[in-house]
Structure formats: C-alpha cells, structure tokens
Image (cartoon, rainbow, N blue to C red; front, side):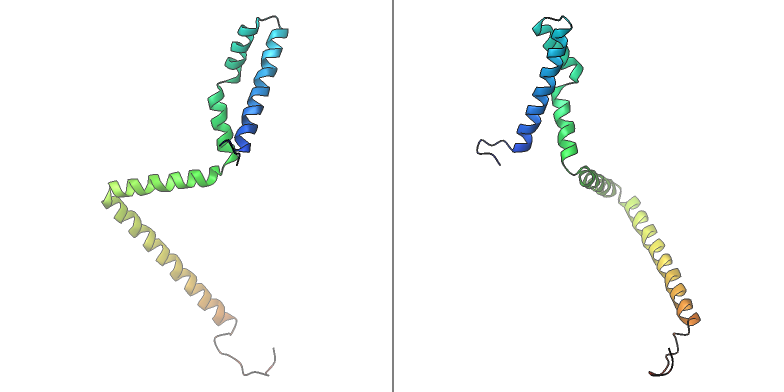
Length: 127
C-alpha cells in the first residue's frame, strides 16, 4: 500500500486511463479539432471514465467468487421470504440425495459380490 492511501493498482489504472485519453485527444487534434473539443470528443469516445474504472475493478478481482456470493445471498433471501417453497425445495433435494445414495450403495454391493470380495480368502492363498 502507498503512504498516500492509494494502492499501486489504482495508480496504474489512473495512469493507463490518462494515457489512453491523451492518445485519443492527440489523435483528434491531428484530425483538426480544437484542443477543448478534442478532449470532449475523446471522453465521449472513451465511454465514460467511471465505467472503465468499474470494469477494471471487476476484472482485477475475483468475479466468479463475487458472483457466487451474490447468488447465494439472493437465493437465501428468496428462501427466507417464502418458507413453504424453502421447505419443498429442501425436501426435494434431500429425497434426491437419498435416492442417489441408495443406487450407489446397491451398485457397490453388486460390484463387490461380482468380484468375489464378499468372501475373503485366507492370507497366503493365491492372488
């Protein structure tokens, strides 16, 4: 962190934005615009500095985790607002999990019986 309360990434972002704006202004001046008009046109073409900063922040962070957290909060608030729906949803998930677990357990049991592992052989008797 910087001593002046501004992180290096924020400074880098500001410097990059300023450089891009200056390049657009210079290009507009070369096309024959007055300096003030060139700057205004560059700002319009750039699409808003605040929007670009926000996009940069989103890309720099962990957008997947932010989105996941936001979705979980939204889902939990929806479940709190409608307790009947929450009960049905939780019951459905629990029954689905139990059914899947039962199928898996029967499949493992069949596989073990097929492989003759349900009757252990004494140690030293062939592999």
